[in-house]
Length: 487
Image (cartoon, rainbow, N blue to C red; front, top):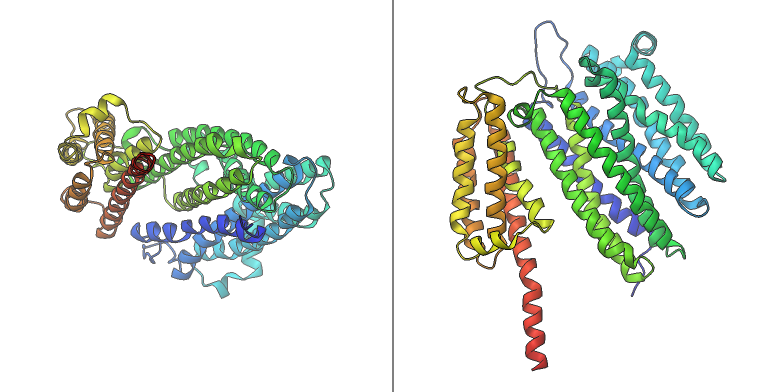
């Protein structure tokens, strides 16, 4: 077996995070967040700032994650500090620092509607950093990250590692004190939960890349790194799930806002991505971690880590979009379920469930011979629920709850039917019908671009179901071939 160079292994996994860049730009574009808005009494933000500020925040988040992850793995998780991993800490901290300095200029441009050249005004910048909470927090971040840049190379043991990690964690938590967290009475709870959320995702993302780099190097104690990071990743998942639920409950007034607003739809998408990450992590613990002492197990870990990085890239992209989207007001009768929520509940969540192995034998027996009716059932249910949610007869909250449950159940039955041996016609039928369904049940406040994005997501999920069906059928063909050979 040819050994892949360490840099190539780590770079290949890290490249999966890049999927978040086009995703966040596409979603922001469909929401109109990348277009100059002329509102009377408010400054017009230059389009360059609208495009670059989200990218700068994405770079900041990735750099922070790399700093935290490589510091935790290279300085604390391994039996002894690893100098090669710790070199990355200072380098990523430099990128983090540059992104923060750029954020100062971009923030001035956004708040005052100035060009970049006009935003580099010492008087205005001084006013921002001395007279506003946002500016003071940015200064604190810059100081802390600068210290990490200088001290990152000086981690000699676990004590110095803990000191530098404390500085990095403090810098990573500070963004939680700004933004939408301060827009409601639950400021403290929102800030604390968001800080935990930011640190957890940073350690998970950066730690995954660092572990893959260390494993790719072929170190003798690579299996120790794999097992320890597996436990750390499990802790991060638990913290992410709990802090995410707290944040969502504080920003929205119930499940109705979750499925009737763009903000809620993004949170729903993040939740489903987290569920997919949990499934992937469970597969890693079941298949790769027990074989961590073998070359095959390490290869499997790196391969699964690539898919994990792609999902984490999607999650990070959605997080940046969420930071650029205002929380919704209270849901009222007449609010319609968004096309994105329709697709996520009826297709995305069931795909994750089937991928996780949630295919009860009774449901398989019912659906495998005639999968087409279940494709029609999912389509009809989506159309009916899109009409039911805005109804004032049941109340918007109860209608949203009923719709969510029924959509998920109908979609689950269809997904189980779709991966059966006769599932191809059902998938093709859905591929043809879903674009028309989304267009017919369109939200009055949604743009054509949002509809097209929902259609693209639906088609991608149906194609994924088709791929899952083909993959599920492959072992059967192999076993038959083996039987013929033996005979």
